[in-house]
Image: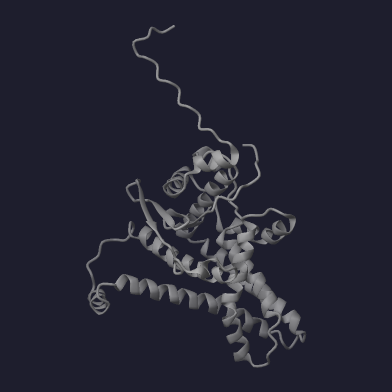
Length: 329
């Protein structure tokens, strides 16, 4: 397959349990390979928490809310995909009580709780823990600037170890395979090739707009920002790191947004570490996974029109059916 210069499509996605979510504008689709082998598909609109608000278009601020939207939509899609694989169980007394207390919104309440808890754990593991681990070396390293860099390196090391650890789980390995299918579909389209299983298989599973790259940019930006925190009180240092998380997310979003639209040498250098880590968070998918990913893309994106406008693609005409009454020659 001839290599072509990439062209930004605007679609993005996420791997879910035995499936893929693809989003284009406010419209998203979740395609899941159900236990019976069929592909379940849900297509919905999600305008985001800033629907109709001008803040949605302000650089650096929009990245904060985009991150919040990703968490909300990601949790919603994961719940949808998990619904196909949950065993039917009788509603427990706790479930009934929670439904009664929340007016039948127990699932939403639990989802919100899990999302908030996940964020708290992520902040604790990837922001607070590296600070205290780097602090163990204060007796040996007196330079504050070097300590800030060391803290950032520890943060990256923890993340890589975390990814390696969860990749040992069978379900996570399959999730990473679907993640690879998601990237391959987007790369296939953005490099001007028709969205077929064959073309998708031959496309790259690394993409500059991936969430993995976003996390890596967060780590790099945090090194720079935390570098300038110059307070002596430990509690103040920790609180400042937490308060700067929205700023870090906003800056990182703008970098990854630019990376998806540019291919200059500086962007390629900045994107290289994230693309390298994607070798861990994506795996080669099988054909059935690619079929699921294609179903999700086609539900929200007219790839034929895109290829026609950006690459001059013309869909080949189907050969005319022969008349059965004609004599063979």
